[in-house]
Image 1: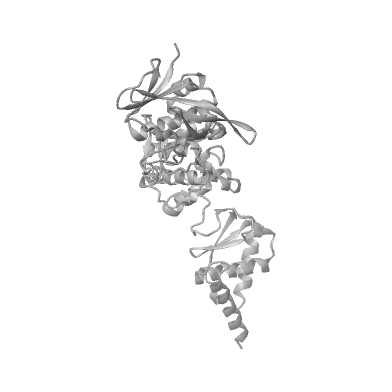
Image 2: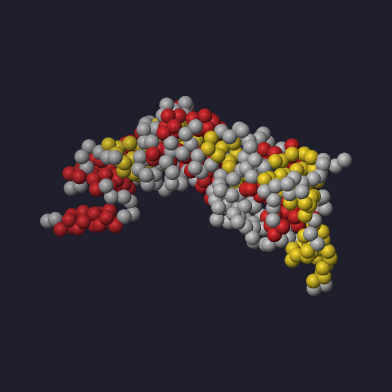
Amino acid sequence: MKNYLKIQSQGEIETEAFTLIGASSKRNDSSKIGFFGSGLKYSISALLRNNIDFKVFQGEKEIKFETVDKNFRDEIYKAISVNGQETSMTTTMGGQDWDLPFAPIREIYSNALDEDEDALLKKESSLHGESGSTTIFIEMNENVNHFFENFDSYFCNKNPNVIHSNEFISIYPTIENDGIRYFRKGILCFHDEKEKPVFNYNSAHFEINESRVLSSHFTAKANIAKGLKVCTNKQVIRELIDTLKGGNSGYLEHKLDWSWYASFSNEWLEVCKDQKFIPAEMVMFAKPSQIEGRVILPKSLLICLYRQFSDLDVLGLSEKSDGADYIEDTNPSVILTDKVIKSMSLLNNTRYAHRLVNPNIIYASFCDKNVLGMAENGKIILSIKLESFDVNAISKIIIEENEHNKTGHSDETRAFQDHLFDLYFDELARK
């Protein structure tokens, strides 16, 4: 005797649910899973097209589905009839996405959940309906059995292993060597065996197309980033940091844009406050002694953490939100320091000396190779690359950064340009 997958929900389904394309009472109900009004029809078409035996009961009465050949422009189509009534539907509906074994099961079970959150799903060999219920049986072939045996890989609504939930996402553990799984409202909408995540994610905000598969990876990753930022579960935060540390590639979460509008929870600060960090992109500019004892994390994550929690110890990030990132060099070459001393001597023997009073000069390796100097909180930060520049060139850079400190104006702004012209004009006008 054949086994079937039995899906049963309270309430007797209307026959029109299988015949009216686009008809859906759930389109404006955000609590419901479905909203296109086509999924159940596509499911029936896919089951018929793939010769998978199925039965549908409206209460105790079976709804009969049959096909009849129809000729249209010299092509034969199999038109679907419901209870002997011919419809405009054919077995070509839905396309290849609906030929995946999970697709029709997903849709039928989702519809059942929309009607009854305690909808039944079990193996069954006896085929009969029950008064007051909608019951659908699907032949338990190899693929259907795989779904049944691995239910939590396709639906997470009954998975008790949820780690954390917030307004953006629910977080679940991954399955070893299984890749990434995204669930929308508890139902699998994306699976990539090659992508490696720290966690699997469920969100009502993931966008899907009419085939019920993820339509926007961009918005999915945005919601994941926001959900992780507002996470208040310290265990999740620690696991994320421990998994991502040491490099800047490999995991889905490495590539997230952490700048999305959402503040990190205070639990992030509690987890991070006693640790020392360095961006993975800055490691190549640091000496081994500077890296020792520091956690290497993606720069995009550390920038956003540092902007919110400025007391964190992050080597290589500028205190300015728009500044160049750098690592201080406390042991610059003698050649460079000699040139800077000569530059200062040169400037102190000009009429500019009165504007250059005991400057705090430090040396650094900048992440951006084009940055030669920067002003930050009264400091003049000079690139160690200036070692190859002459004294006059270094003097000009010192003047520029000193004026940034005095005025507070940023690079490439009209205000700073006007300020330099004013200085130049005042000098020309002096007798």
